Image: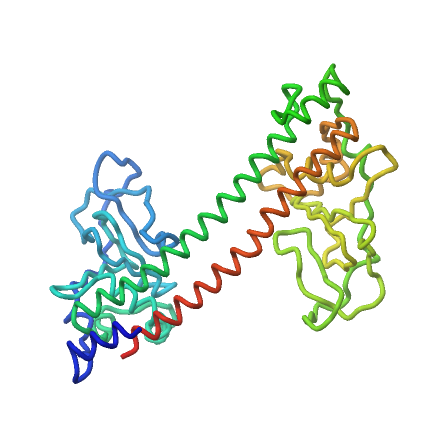
Length: 394
């Protein structure tokens, strides 16, 4: 950071000045409107935010509520910070919004960059949270916010710090966009390859095979006629004291998939040479497994191919692509009475194998990116946090 060091030496050789937030920024505490002044009609009033709002993007997210009351309004470019649980969440608004209780607006005064203040807050959220823990309900009062002390170097230094940190956040956003684009590309081709309603899938080689092998159209079969299930009772883990030094993975069919590792040596399902699917009977979530494992829940089923002339991997792709609804508010098992009764397209084995080859190759390509990019994103985040903290500690 030699350029910033040089600027600091040039503009503040005696050290960086510190000021309270109320001295360096215009501060507005949100207030809730009285009466029936909030609606979801966007044609009238000002967009209204209250309490925990949308802090997931680089710019504050849209609200579907509007108010006609004359209350506190945050101007474009202002920091919007949560002053109630979770205290310290913040972002910048790109438009005029109305703020209710639980939020405050912060905007730098003359010669003070609001974006610099934003980065300082992000770097000092822990300190702000400590201030908020004085009460039983996590919140930070107006006087505490006003008294927050911030280093205020000259504007030239502030701008250079913002420039460096903006570059980090832009690169991270680009990597995340690339990851999302690759996943969408994979999903597009997967959907295209597994849609037989028009007698073709739009891939010349496979369409030619379909026209030659099944000119009357692709036949359909029930999942239950193709796939058998095994109850997981014998393979349940006895202890949940997992340790990464142990060797046997413990799985769930849910989103988390790998729960941890166990040192239990009995009741291990051997799938290394004979892959299976694990299927959550309540949520219908599923995963392909080609290694030995134990399971956590009796609510899942272990699926295997019956003695049919079919590709188990093809069936997995079709089932992952199914538009199956579990219903709202129901908590029931699905495999036997519902899911296994669903019909799916079963083209000739040669076609199945060709589809599997294409999807497997594409999956490897996406996975190599999907495994590499998150690691790169995580590394960039750590690098960004390191430099942010380093840059904002004078």
